[in-house]
Image: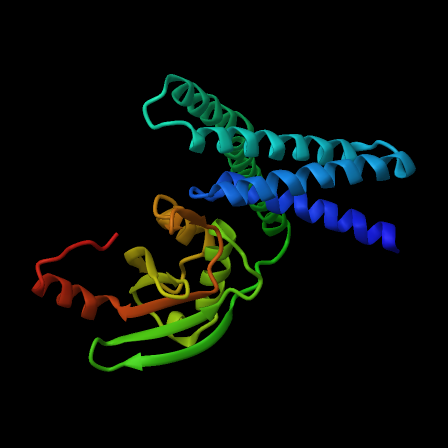
Length: 268
């Protein structure tokens, strides 16, 4: 138990030291000297314990982390003790800069790119699997949360929940399946619909003014909006799923007159 606790402390010291040394800009001589001393003592204790637990990938990694910490302490300590305009200081700063880039910045960039590519591949895989399932199975409609008529704008607002976290093509297929089960859709005659999708604090419009009628199928609808299905971004990251979707449904003739009065003609 005591040996395990000692190893955990050694690991904590190594990781905490490296975080301090590569992220804190202003470290004085006392902090650097203390960090250097603690890492030297911890390295000695680690080597002592390695004799009983043996060398493995974890102990080897820990060993190199301690060597890294000692090197960073020494080079930063020397740099802050040299005068401002000094060729040796400029040389050491360049070594320190290149070392940080090679050991931390570049690997971190590669890791982020790798994770981003992996995330994209998983999204593609998920879409492919969903496409296969929806080609084989009956499309299950989304859950209807609420329905209300807007007497001022002459439209019915449907709010649906993406309870199965579908995305892209499968999501809009299930959405239209849900709409087609509503009595407003079944009424004879042309209608106009707008679809919007919402996150916690933003609303994105998928398309505007799509003409449908009671005979429009899911596949007809997907064909109409195929150029509108896109990836949306929030804080620089792609949003692949949406929890809440809303449809506004108008009578075609009423909406057409309203748009013409406003000088708009974006019905497709």
